[in-house]
Image (tube, rainbow over all chains, first blue to last red; front, side, top):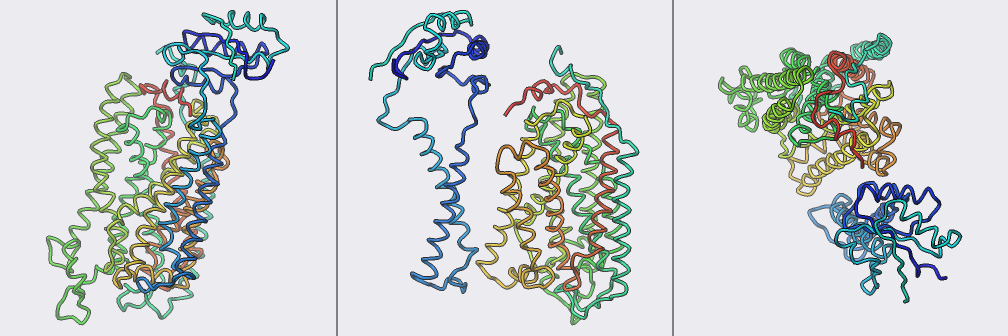
Length: 177
Length: 431
Protein backbone atom coordinates (compact mmCIF):
# COMPACT_ATOMS: atom_id res chain seq x y z
CA UNK A 1 0.00 0.00 0.00
CA UNK A 2 1.44 3.33 -1.05
CA UNK A 3 1.38 6.48 1.06
CA UNK A 4 -1.19 9.15 0.26
CA UNK A 5 -3.52 6.91 -1.75
CA UNK A 6 -5.85 4.94 0.52
CA UNK A 7 -7.76 6.80 3.24
CA UNK A 8 -10.45 6.22 5.79
CA UNK A 9 -12.71 9.24 6.26
CA UNK A 10 -14.72 10.12 9.33
CA UNK A 11 -17.54 12.55 8.59
CA UNK A 12 -18.61 14.83 11.45
CA UNK A 13 -21.70 17.01 11.77
CA UNK A 14 -20.68 19.27 14.62
CA UNK A 15 -17.45 21.12 15.41
CA UNK A 16 -17.58 20.35 19.13
CA UNK A 17 -17.91 16.64 18.40
CA UNK A 18 -15.08 17.01 15.89
CA UNK A 19 -12.79 18.70 18.44
CA UNK A 20 -13.36 15.93 20.97
CA UNK A 21 -12.96 13.30 18.27
CA UNK A 22 -9.60 14.71 17.21
CA UNK A 23 -8.32 14.46 20.77
CA UNK A 24 -9.78 10.97 21.21
CA UNK A 25 -8.46 9.62 17.90
CA UNK A 26 -5.00 11.03 18.50
CA UNK A 27 -4.81 9.63 22.02
CA UNK A 28 -5.78 6.17 20.72
CA UNK A 29 -2.62 6.23 18.60
CA UNK A 30 -4.06 6.93 15.14
CA UNK A 31 -2.13 9.49 13.12
CA UNK A 32 -4.53 11.94 11.44
CA UNK A 33 -3.64 12.96 7.90
CA UNK A 34 -5.75 16.13 7.82
CA UNK A 35 -9.09 17.55 8.91
CA UNK A 36 -11.20 19.40 6.34
CA UNK A 37 -13.93 21.78 7.40
CA UNK A 38 -16.12 24.34 5.61
CA UNK A 39 -14.98 27.15 7.92
CA UNK A 40 -12.06 27.74 10.31
CA UNK A 41 -12.61 25.87 13.56
CA UNK A 42 -11.03 27.77 16.43
CA UNK A 43 -8.37 25.77 18.24
CA UNK A 44 -8.38 22.87 15.78
CA UNK A 45 -4.74 23.35 14.84
CA UNK A 46 -3.79 23.04 18.51
CA UNK A 47 -5.89 19.89 18.92
CA UNK A 48 -4.19 18.42 15.84
CA UNK A 49 -0.81 19.25 17.35
CA UNK A 50 0.41 21.34 14.45
CA UNK A 51 3.67 23.13 14.93
CA UNK A 52 3.70 26.90 14.50
CA UNK A 53 4.17 28.06 10.95
CA UNK A 54 7.68 29.15 10.06
CA UNK A 55 6.34 31.62 7.53
CA UNK A 56 7.41 34.66 9.64
CA UNK A 57 11.03 33.56 9.29
CA UNK A 58 10.64 33.54 5.51
CA UNK A 59 9.04 36.98 5.71
CA UNK A 60 11.93 38.31 7.78
CA UNK A 61 14.56 36.92 5.42
CA UNK A 62 12.79 38.24 2.33
CA UNK A 63 12.42 41.61 4.06
CA UNK A 64 16.12 41.64 4.82
CA UNK A 65 16.81 40.80 1.18
CA UNK A 66 14.60 43.70 0.11
CA UNK A 67 16.40 46.16 2.37
CA UNK A 68 19.83 45.09 1.19
CA UNK A 69 18.83 45.05 -2.47
CA UNK A 70 17.33 48.53 -2.23
CA UNK A 71 20.32 49.99 -0.41
CA UNK A 72 22.80 48.34 -2.75
CA UNK A 73 20.89 49.53 -5.80
CA UNK A 74 20.68 53.10 -4.58
CA UNK A 75 24.28 53.30 -3.41
CA UNK A 76 25.50 51.86 -6.70
CA UNK A 77 23.36 54.18 -8.80
CA UNK A 78 23.85 57.36 -6.86
CA UNK A 79 27.47 56.98 -5.84
CA UNK A 80 29.14 55.04 -8.68
CA UNK A 81 27.02 54.58 -11.76
CA UNK A 82 25.56 58.01 -12.33
CA UNK A 83 26.41 60.44 -9.51
CA UNK A 84 24.12 63.44 -9.40
CA UNK A 85 23.88 66.31 -6.99
CA UNK A 86 20.31 66.51 -5.78
CA UNK A 87 19.30 69.25 -3.39
CA UNK A 88 22.93 69.97 -2.53
CA UNK A 89 23.30 66.64 -0.75
CA UNK A 90 26.14 64.14 -0.87
CA UNK A 91 26.00 61.56 -3.65
CA UNK A 92 25.37 58.85 -1.08
CA UNK A 93 22.80 60.64 1.02
CA UNK A 94 21.73 57.87 3.35
CA UNK A 95 18.49 59.41 4.76
CA UNK A 96 17.17 59.82 1.21
CA UNK A 97 17.49 56.07 0.64
CA UNK A 98 15.32 55.08 3.58
CA UNK A 99 11.85 55.49 1.99
CA UNK A 100 12.80 53.39 -1.01
CA UNK A 101 14.46 50.79 1.20
CA UNK A 102 11.36 50.66 3.36
CA UNK A 103 9.11 50.10 0.37
CA UNK A 104 11.37 47.42 -1.09
CA UNK A 105 11.46 45.68 2.29
CA UNK A 106 7.69 45.59 2.48
CA UNK A 107 7.33 44.54 -1.16
CA UNK A 108 9.78 41.65 -1.02
CA UNK A 109 8.58 40.52 2.40
CA UNK A 110 4.99 40.41 1.16
CA UNK A 111 5.71 38.77 -2.19
CA UNK A 112 8.20 36.37 -0.65
CA UNK A 113 5.75 35.36 2.04
CA UNK A 114 2.96 34.75 -0.46
CA UNK A 115 5.32 32.78 -2.70
CA UNK A 116 6.65 30.62 0.10
CA UNK A 117 3.12 30.01 1.33
CA UNK A 118 1.98 28.94 -2.16
CA UNK A 119 4.89 26.55 -2.55
CA UNK A 120 4.66 25.06 0.93
CA UNK A 121 0.88 24.64 0.69
CA UNK A 122 1.06 23.14 -2.78
CA UNK A 123 -1.04 25.95 -4.23
CA UNK A 124 0.71 26.09 -7.59
CA UNK A 125 -1.70 26.85 -10.46
CA UNK A 126 -1.33 23.40 -12.03
CA UNK A 127 -1.83 21.56 -8.76
CA UNK A 128 -4.59 18.94 -8.78
CA UNK A 129 -6.58 19.46 -5.63
CA UNK A 130 -7.75 16.35 -3.84
CA UNK A 131 -11.38 16.51 -2.83
CA UNK A 132 -11.93 13.98 -0.08
CA UNK A 133 -15.63 14.63 0.15
CA UNK A 134 -17.62 17.31 -1.65
CA UNK A 135 -19.61 18.07 1.49
CA UNK A 136 -16.58 19.72 3.15
CA UNK A 137 -17.46 22.80 1.14
CA UNK A 138 -20.97 22.74 2.57
CA UNK A 139 -21.82 21.49 6.04
CA UNK A 140 -19.60 18.55 7.01
CA UNK A 141 -16.22 18.19 8.68
CA UNK A 142 -14.07 15.36 7.40
CA UNK A 143 -11.19 13.72 9.19
CA UNK A 144 -8.86 11.82 6.86
CA UNK A 145 -6.65 8.99 8.11
CA UNK A 146 -3.92 7.66 5.83
CA UNK A 147 -4.02 3.85 5.93
CA UNK A 148 -0.39 3.43 4.87
CA UNK A 149 0.82 5.65 7.71
CA UNK A 150 -1.29 3.70 10.21
CA UNK A 151 -0.53 0.29 8.72
CA UNK A 152 0.17 -1.20 12.14
CA UNK A 153 -3.39 -0.50 13.20
CA UNK A 154 -5.60 -2.32 10.74
CA UNK A 155 -8.42 -0.76 8.74
CA UNK A 156 -11.27 -2.19 10.81
CA UNK A 157 -9.75 -0.93 14.07
CA UNK A 158 -9.39 2.58 12.67
CA UNK A 159 -12.96 2.59 11.45
CA UNK A 160 -14.11 1.47 14.86
CA UNK A 161 -12.18 4.28 16.60
CA UNK A 162 -13.60 6.87 14.22
CA UNK A 163 -17.16 5.65 14.67
CA UNK A 164 -16.88 5.53 18.45
CA UNK A 165 -15.46 9.08 18.54
CA UNK A 166 -18.69 10.44 17.09
CA UNK A 167 -18.38 10.25 13.30
CA UNK A 168 -21.76 10.09 11.61
CA UNK A 169 -20.31 8.13 8.66
CA UNK A 170 -17.07 6.28 8.10
CA UNK A 171 -16.08 5.91 4.44
CA UNK A 172 -13.18 4.70 2.34
CA UNK A 173 -11.54 6.92 -0.21
CA UNK A 174 -8.77 6.07 -2.63
CA UNK A 175 -6.94 8.17 -5.14
CA UNK A 176 -5.20 6.79 -8.19
CA UNK A 177 -3.01 9.42 -9.75
CA UNK B 1 -23.09 34.86 35.48
CA UNK B 2 -22.30 31.21 35.77
CA UNK B 3 -19.06 31.69 33.95
CA UNK B 4 -15.56 30.41 34.23
CA UNK B 5 -14.21 33.75 35.45
CA UNK B 6 -16.10 33.13 38.68
CA UNK B 7 -13.40 30.60 39.52
CA UNK B 8 -11.01 33.51 40.06
CA UNK B 9 -10.95 35.82 43.02
CA UNK B 10 -12.56 38.86 41.41
CA UNK B 11 -12.66 40.91 44.62
CA UNK B 12 -8.89 40.90 44.74
CA UNK B 13 -7.27 44.15 45.83
CA UNK B 14 -3.65 45.11 45.32
CA UNK B 15 -1.90 45.15 48.67
CA UNK B 16 0.65 47.97 48.56
CA UNK B 17 2.91 46.38 51.16
CA UNK B 18 5.50 48.33 53.15
CA UNK B 19 8.12 46.16 51.43
CA UNK B 20 7.24 47.43 47.96
CA UNK B 21 6.90 50.98 49.29
CA UNK B 22 10.30 50.70 50.89
CA UNK B 23 12.05 49.59 47.71
CA UNK B 24 10.43 52.42 45.73
CA UNK B 25 11.41 54.87 48.46
CA UNK B 26 14.98 53.58 48.26
CA UNK B 27 15.09 54.39 44.56
CA UNK B 28 13.61 57.79 45.32
CA UNK B 29 16.27 58.50 47.94
CA UNK B 30 19.07 57.34 45.62
CA UNK B 31 17.62 59.68 43.00
CA UNK B 32 17.45 62.53 45.51
CA UNK B 33 21.08 61.93 46.53
CA UNK B 34 22.21 61.96 42.89
CA UNK B 35 20.16 65.10 42.34
CA UNK B 36 21.87 66.86 45.24
CA UNK B 37 25.28 65.79 43.95
CA UNK B 38 24.30 67.09 40.51
CA UNK B 39 23.14 70.43 41.91
CA UNK B 40 26.32 70.88 43.95
CA UNK B 41 28.46 70.05 40.93
CA UNK B 42 26.50 72.47 38.77
CA UNK B 43 26.80 75.24 41.36
CA UNK B 44 30.53 74.79 41.64
CA UNK B 45 31.12 74.33 37.95
CA UNK B 46 29.12 77.33 36.84
CA UNK B 47 28.18 77.83 33.23
CA UNK B 48 30.25 77.95 30.11
CA UNK B 49 30.49 81.14 28.17
CA UNK B 50 28.48 79.89 25.19
CA UNK B 51 24.74 80.15 25.08
CA UNK B 52 21.98 78.14 23.47
CA UNK B 53 20.45 79.42 20.29
CA UNK B 54 17.40 80.63 22.14
CA UNK B 55 19.14 81.82 25.30
CA UNK B 56 18.96 85.32 23.92
CA UNK B 57 22.13 86.81 25.29
CA UNK B 58 21.51 86.00 28.93
CA UNK B 59 24.30 84.60 31.06
CA UNK B 60 23.94 80.97 32.03
CA UNK B 61 23.04 80.12 35.62
CA UNK B 62 23.33 76.67 37.16
CA UNK B 63 19.65 76.64 38.19
CA UNK B 64 18.57 76.77 34.56
CA UNK B 65 19.72 73.19 34.20
CA UNK B 66 17.64 72.26 37.23
CA UNK B 67 14.64 74.04 35.69
CA UNK B 68 15.07 72.25 32.38
CA UNK B 69 15.20 68.91 34.20
CA UNK B 70 12.04 69.68 36.15
CA UNK B 71 10.35 70.60 32.89
CA UNK B 72 11.47 67.46 31.01
CA UNK B 73 10.10 65.22 33.75
CA UNK B 74 6.93 67.27 34.19
CA UNK B 75 6.07 66.86 30.55
CA UNK B 76 7.23 63.26 30.31
CA UNK B 77 5.39 61.89 33.33
CA UNK B 78 2.28 63.96 32.64
CA UNK B 79 2.29 62.18 29.30
CA UNK B 80 2.60 58.73 30.85
CA UNK B 81 -0.26 59.54 33.24
CA UNK B 82 -2.60 60.88 30.57
CA UNK B 83 -1.77 57.99 28.24
CA UNK B 84 -2.97 55.61 30.94
CA UNK B 85 -6.35 57.36 30.88
CA UNK B 86 -6.24 57.59 27.07
CA UNK B 87 -5.56 53.88 26.61
CA UNK B 88 -8.34 53.14 29.10
CA UNK B 89 -10.76 55.29 27.09
CA UNK B 90 -9.66 53.60 23.85
CA UNK B 91 -10.63 50.20 25.30
CA UNK B 92 -14.16 51.39 25.99
CA UNK B 93 -14.61 53.41 22.82
CA UNK B 94 -13.41 50.45 20.74
CA UNK B 95 -15.57 48.07 22.81
CA UNK B 96 -12.50 45.95 23.41
CA UNK B 97 -13.03 42.79 25.39
CA UNK B 98 -9.55 41.35 25.73
CA UNK B 99 -8.28 44.14 27.97
CA UNK B 100 -11.10 44.06 30.54
CA UNK B 101 -9.09 42.73 33.50
CA UNK B 102 -6.23 45.21 33.06
CA UNK B 103 -8.29 48.36 32.51
CA UNK B 104 -7.93 49.38 36.15
CA UNK B 105 -4.16 49.33 35.82
CA UNK B 106 -4.40 51.80 32.92
CA UNK B 107 -6.80 54.02 34.83
CA UNK B 108 -4.56 54.07 37.90
CA UNK B 109 -1.97 56.07 35.97
CA UNK B 110 -4.38 59.00 36.00
CA UNK B 111 -3.77 59.37 39.73
CA UNK B 112 -0.62 61.26 38.88
CA UNK B 113 -2.55 63.88 36.87
CA UNK B 114 -3.62 66.20 39.74
CA UNK B 115 -0.07 66.25 41.08
CA UNK B 116 1.31 66.72 37.60
CA UNK B 117 -1.05 69.68 37.14
CA UNK B 118 0.18 71.38 40.32
CA UNK B 119 3.82 70.70 39.46
CA UNK B 120 3.45 71.90 35.89
CA UNK B 121 1.62 75.12 36.72
CA UNK B 122 3.82 75.93 39.70
CA UNK B 123 7.03 75.27 37.82
CA UNK B 124 5.80 77.32 34.89
CA UNK B 125 5.37 80.34 37.15
CA UNK B 126 8.68 79.74 38.92
CA UNK B 127 10.80 78.76 35.94
CA UNK B 128 8.92 79.72 32.80
CA UNK B 129 10.87 82.89 32.30
CA UNK B 130 14.13 80.96 32.17
CA UNK B 131 12.77 78.11 30.07
CA UNK B 132 10.78 79.91 27.44
CA UNK B 133 12.52 82.40 25.23
CA UNK B 134 9.21 83.99 24.28
CA UNK B 135 8.62 85.15 27.85
CA UNK B 136 10.79 88.24 27.40
CA UNK B 137 9.04 91.57 26.97
CA UNK B 138 11.81 93.16 24.88
CA UNK B 139 11.21 90.69 22.01
CA UNK B 140 7.90 92.39 21.33
CA UNK B 141 9.11 95.96 21.75
CA UNK B 142 9.75 97.48 18.33
CA UNK B 143 12.03 100.12 19.86
CA UNK B 144 14.28 97.55 21.50
CA UNK B 145 17.35 96.14 19.71
CA UNK B 146 16.14 92.72 20.86
CA UNK B 147 12.93 93.07 18.84
CA UNK B 148 12.13 89.83 17.01
CA UNK B 149 9.53 90.10 14.27
CA UNK B 150 9.06 86.32 13.97
CA UNK B 151 8.29 85.88 17.66
CA UNK B 152 6.21 89.04 17.58
CA UNK B 153 4.06 87.36 14.93
CA UNK B 154 3.54 84.36 17.20
CA UNK B 155 2.99 86.48 20.31
CA UNK B 156 -0.79 86.32 20.35
CA UNK B 157 -0.61 82.55 20.80
CA UNK B 158 0.88 83.12 24.23
CA UNK B 159 -0.37 86.50 25.40
CA UNK B 160 -3.85 87.02 23.95
CA UNK B 161 -5.93 88.95 25.03
CA UNK B 162 -3.30 90.96 26.90
CA UNK B 163 -0.53 92.97 25.33
CA UNK B 164 2.32 90.89 23.89
CA UNK B 165 5.20 90.55 26.29
CA UNK B 166 3.15 91.17 29.41
CA UNK B 167 1.63 88.04 30.93
CA UNK B 168 0.92 84.81 28.97
CA UNK B 169 -2.78 84.53 29.79
CA UNK B 170 -3.75 82.42 26.80
CA UNK B 171 -0.92 79.97 27.41
CA UNK B 172 -1.73 79.52 31.09
CA UNK B 173 -5.46 79.30 30.38
CA UNK B 174 -4.79 76.43 27.97
CA UNK B 175 -2.64 74.67 30.54
CA UNK B 176 -5.35 74.97 33.20
CA UNK B 177 -8.14 73.96 30.81
CA UNK B 178 -6.26 70.87 29.61
CA UNK B 179 -5.37 69.67 33.08
CA UNK B 180 -8.81 70.60 34.37
CA UNK B 181 -10.59 68.52 31.77
CA UNK B 182 -8.12 65.63 32.00
CA UNK B 183 -8.58 65.42 35.77
CA UNK B 184 -12.34 65.83 35.33
CA UNK B 185 -12.55 62.94 32.86
CA UNK B 186 -10.26 60.82 35.01
CA UNK B 187 -12.42 61.30 38.11
CA UNK B 188 -15.54 60.67 36.04
CA UNK B 189 -14.08 57.34 34.86
CA UNK B 190 -13.13 56.48 38.41
CA UNK B 191 -16.61 57.26 39.68
CA UNK B 192 -18.32 55.13 37.02
CA UNK B 193 -15.86 52.31 37.69
CA UNK B 194 -16.58 52.39 41.41
CA UNK B 195 -20.34 52.39 40.75
CA UNK B 196 -19.94 49.44 38.37
CA UNK B 197 -18.10 47.46 41.04
CA UNK B 198 -20.89 48.08 43.52
CA UNK B 199 -24.00 47.80 41.40
CA UNK B 200 -23.10 45.71 38.35
CA UNK B 201 -25.11 45.60 35.14
CA UNK B 202 -24.21 46.86 31.70
CA UNK B 203 -25.43 50.45 32.08
CA UNK B 204 -22.10 51.58 33.54
CA UNK B 205 -20.24 50.11 30.62
CA UNK B 206 -22.38 52.12 28.19
CA UNK B 207 -21.91 55.24 30.27
CA UNK B 208 -18.17 54.68 30.29
CA UNK B 209 -18.17 54.26 26.52
CA UNK B 210 -19.92 57.60 25.99
CA UNK B 211 -17.58 59.45 28.34
CA UNK B 212 -14.60 57.75 26.72
CA UNK B 213 -15.71 59.06 23.34
CA UNK B 214 -16.02 62.60 24.70
CA UNK B 215 -12.62 62.32 26.30
CA UNK B 216 -10.99 61.05 23.11
CA UNK B 217 -12.30 64.02 21.14
CA UNK B 218 -10.94 66.38 23.76
CA UNK B 219 -7.65 64.51 24.00
CA UNK B 220 -7.14 64.56 20.23
CA UNK B 221 -7.00 68.35 20.33
CA UNK B 222 -5.43 68.88 23.73
CA UNK B 223 -2.57 66.42 23.29
CA UNK B 224 -1.40 68.18 20.15
CA UNK B 225 -1.73 71.69 21.52
CA UNK B 226 -0.06 70.79 24.80
CA UNK B 227 2.88 69.46 22.80
CA UNK B 228 3.20 72.79 20.97
CA UNK B 229 2.84 74.73 24.20
CA UNK B 230 5.01 72.77 26.57
CA UNK B 231 7.69 71.49 24.22
CA UNK B 232 7.72 73.09 20.78
CA UNK B 233 7.47 76.68 22.06
CA UNK B 234 10.87 76.24 23.71
CA UNK B 235 12.40 76.56 20.24
CA UNK B 236 10.25 79.58 19.59
CA UNK B 237 11.34 80.38 16.04
CA UNK B 238 11.08 76.84 14.84
CA UNK B 239 7.97 74.86 14.11
CA UNK B 240 7.00 71.44 12.83
CA UNK B 241 3.50 70.56 11.74
CA UNK B 242 3.63 67.00 13.01
CA UNK B 243 5.15 67.86 16.36
CA UNK B 244 1.92 67.20 18.26
CA UNK B 245 1.74 63.66 16.95
CA UNK B 246 5.43 63.12 17.49
CA UNK B 247 5.16 64.04 21.18
CA UNK B 248 1.98 62.03 21.52
CA UNK B 249 3.60 58.93 20.02
CA UNK B 250 6.53 59.28 22.41
CA UNK B 251 4.12 59.57 25.32
CA UNK B 252 2.08 56.66 24.06
CA UNK B 253 5.00 54.24 23.81
CA UNK B 254 6.27 55.28 27.24
CA UNK B 255 2.76 54.93 28.69
CA UNK B 256 2.20 51.52 27.11
CA UNK B 257 5.55 50.34 28.44
CA UNK B 258 4.67 51.55 31.93
CA UNK B 259 1.26 49.85 31.84
CA UNK B 260 2.86 46.60 30.66
CA UNK B 261 5.55 46.78 33.34
CA UNK B 262 2.93 47.21 36.06
CA UNK B 263 0.86 44.32 34.67
CA UNK B 264 3.90 42.04 34.61
CA UNK B 265 4.89 43.21 38.08
CA UNK B 266 1.39 42.46 39.43
CA UNK B 267 1.35 39.06 37.78
CA UNK B 268 4.74 38.31 39.31
CA UNK B 269 3.27 39.12 42.73
CA UNK B 270 0.43 36.66 42.12
CA UNK B 271 -2.29 39.16 41.22
CA UNK B 272 -4.35 39.29 38.01
CA UNK B 273 -4.53 35.51 37.72
CA UNK B 274 -6.88 35.63 34.76
CA UNK B 275 -4.40 37.65 32.74
CA UNK B 276 -2.32 35.19 30.74
CA UNK B 277 0.31 35.35 28.04
CA UNK B 278 -2.32 36.14 25.40
CA UNK B 279 -3.09 39.48 27.05
CA UNK B 280 0.58 40.18 27.56
CA UNK B 281 1.13 39.32 23.90
CA UNK B 282 -1.38 41.98 22.87
CA UNK B 283 0.33 44.59 25.03
CA UNK B 284 3.62 43.56 23.46
CA UNK B 285 2.15 44.03 19.99
CA UNK B 286 0.99 47.52 20.93
CA UNK B 287 4.49 48.40 22.13
CA UNK B 288 6.09 46.91 19.03
CA UNK B 289 3.68 48.64 16.67
CA UNK B 290 3.79 52.05 18.29
CA UNK B 291 7.57 51.99 18.56
CA UNK B 292 7.56 51.75 14.79
CA UNK B 293 4.91 54.46 14.66
CA UNK B 294 7.14 56.74 16.75
CA UNK B 295 10.05 56.03 14.42
CA UNK B 296 7.88 56.78 11.42
CA UNK B 297 6.96 60.19 12.82
CA UNK B 298 10.47 60.96 14.01
CA UNK B 299 11.90 60.07 10.63
CA UNK B 300 9.17 61.90 8.70
CA UNK B 301 9.98 65.05 10.61
CA UNK B 302 13.69 64.58 10.10
CA UNK B 303 13.65 63.58 6.43
CA UNK B 304 11.49 66.48 5.25
CA UNK B 305 13.61 69.01 7.10
CA UNK B 306 16.83 67.39 5.90
CA UNK B 307 15.67 67.17 2.31
CA UNK B 308 14.22 70.66 2.00
CA UNK B 309 17.13 72.16 3.92
CA UNK B 310 15.40 75.44 4.71
CA UNK B 311 17.57 77.28 7.25
CA UNK B 312 14.79 78.16 9.67
CA UNK B 313 13.75 74.52 9.81
CA UNK B 314 17.08 72.72 9.69
CA UNK B 315 18.49 74.78 12.56
CA UNK B 316 16.61 72.44 14.91
CA UNK B 317 18.62 69.43 13.80
CA UNK B 318 21.87 71.30 13.31
CA UNK B 319 21.61 72.42 16.93
CA UNK B 320 21.33 68.76 17.95
CA UNK B 321 23.35 66.73 15.43
CA UNK B 322 26.34 69.07 15.29
CA UNK B 323 26.53 69.49 19.05
CA UNK B 324 29.16 67.74 21.16
CA UNK B 325 26.58 67.36 23.89
CA UNK B 326 23.55 66.11 21.98
CA UNK B 327 24.95 64.63 18.75
CA UNK B 328 25.44 61.16 20.21
CA UNK B 329 22.06 61.14 21.90
CA UNK B 330 20.25 61.39 18.57
CA UNK B 331 21.63 57.94 17.71
CA UNK B 332 21.07 56.62 21.24
CA UNK B 333 17.47 57.76 20.79
CA UNK B 334 17.01 55.81 17.55
CA UNK B 335 18.74 52.68 18.82
CA UNK B 336 16.85 52.59 22.12
CA UNK B 337 13.44 53.46 20.77
CA UNK B 338 13.51 51.74 17.41
CA UNK B 339 16.31 49.31 16.64
CA UNK B 340 16.38 47.36 19.90
CA UNK B 341 12.60 47.09 20.52
CA UNK B 342 12.10 46.24 16.84
CA UNK B 343 14.61 43.40 16.85
CA UNK B 344 13.83 42.06 20.33
CA UNK B 345 10.03 42.14 20.11
CA UNK B 346 9.83 40.82 16.56
CA UNK B 347 9.19 37.20 17.45
CA UNK B 348 5.98 35.93 18.99
CA UNK B 349 7.77 34.34 21.94
CA UNK B 350 9.43 37.59 22.98
CA UNK B 351 6.02 39.26 23.24
CA UNK B 352 4.63 36.42 25.35
CA UNK B 353 7.38 36.11 27.93
CA UNK B 354 7.72 38.57 30.77
CA UNK B 355 11.49 38.73 30.76
CA UNK B 356 11.85 40.16 27.24
CA UNK B 357 8.99 42.58 27.75
CA UNK B 358 10.39 43.76 31.07
CA UNK B 359 13.69 44.44 29.38
CA UNK B 360 12.19 46.28 26.42
CA UNK B 361 9.72 48.27 28.55
CA UNK B 362 12.47 49.50 30.85
CA UNK B 363 14.57 50.35 27.82
CA UNK B 364 11.71 52.28 26.24
CA UNK B 365 10.83 54.21 29.41
CA UNK B 366 14.42 55.42 29.59
CA UNK B 367 14.60 55.81 25.81
CA UNK B 368 11.63 58.10 25.55
CA UNK B 369 12.95 60.15 28.42
CA UNK B 370 16.03 60.65 26.23
CA UNK B 371 13.67 61.74 23.45
CA UNK B 372 12.16 64.44 25.67
CA UNK B 373 15.62 65.36 26.90
CA UNK B 374 16.55 66.01 23.26
CA UNK B 375 13.43 68.10 22.73
CA UNK B 376 13.88 70.32 25.79
CA UNK B 377 17.54 70.76 26.65
CA UNK B 378 19.11 72.06 23.44
CA UNK B 379 16.64 74.95 23.30
CA UNK B 380 16.90 75.84 26.97
CA UNK B 381 20.50 75.12 27.89
CA UNK B 382 22.43 74.94 24.63
CA UNK B 383 25.97 73.75 25.26
CA UNK B 384 25.43 73.75 29.02
CA UNK B 385 23.17 70.69 28.97
CA UNK B 386 23.94 67.00 29.05
CA UNK B 387 23.14 63.87 30.98
CA UNK B 388 24.75 63.96 34.41
CA UNK B 389 23.93 63.26 38.03
CA UNK B 390 21.19 65.87 37.97
CA UNK B 391 19.35 64.30 35.02
CA UNK B 392 19.57 60.75 36.35
CA UNK B 393 18.62 61.85 39.88
CA UNK B 394 15.65 63.91 38.76
CA UNK B 395 14.39 61.08 36.53
CA UNK B 396 14.61 58.60 39.41
CA UNK B 397 12.88 60.99 41.83
CA UNK B 398 10.01 61.66 39.44
CA UNK B 399 9.75 58.05 38.32
CA UNK B 400 9.54 56.63 41.82
CA UNK B 401 7.12 59.36 42.91
CA UNK B 402 4.88 58.41 39.99
CA UNK B 403 5.22 54.73 40.93
CA UNK B 404 4.19 55.50 44.52
CA UNK B 405 1.17 57.52 43.46
CA UNK B 406 0.03 55.09 40.76
CA UNK B 407 0.41 51.94 42.87
CA UNK B 408 -1.15 53.75 45.82
CA UNK B 409 -4.15 54.62 43.67
CA UNK B 410 -4.31 51.06 42.36
CA UNK B 411 -4.41 49.68 45.92
CA UNK B 412 -7.51 51.73 46.75
CA UNK B 413 -9.94 50.14 44.31
CA UNK B 414 -10.69 46.70 42.97
CA UNK B 415 -7.86 45.35 40.85
CA UNK B 416 -10.23 43.62 38.43
CA UNK B 417 -13.45 45.26 37.23
CA UNK B 418 -15.52 42.37 38.55
CA UNK B 419 -18.77 43.45 36.91
CA UNK B 420 -17.25 44.28 33.53
CA UNK B 421 -19.57 42.67 30.94
CA UNK B 422 -16.63 41.42 28.85
CA UNK B 423 -14.64 39.69 31.58
CA UNK B 424 -15.62 36.25 30.33
CA UNK B 425 -14.68 37.18 26.78
CA UNK B 426 -11.33 38.40 28.00
CA UNK B 427 -10.70 35.17 29.86
CA UNK B 428 -11.22 33.23 26.62
CA UNK B 429 -9.05 35.63 24.66
CA UNK B 430 -6.72 33.51 22.63
CA UNK B 431 -4.24 34.53 19.97
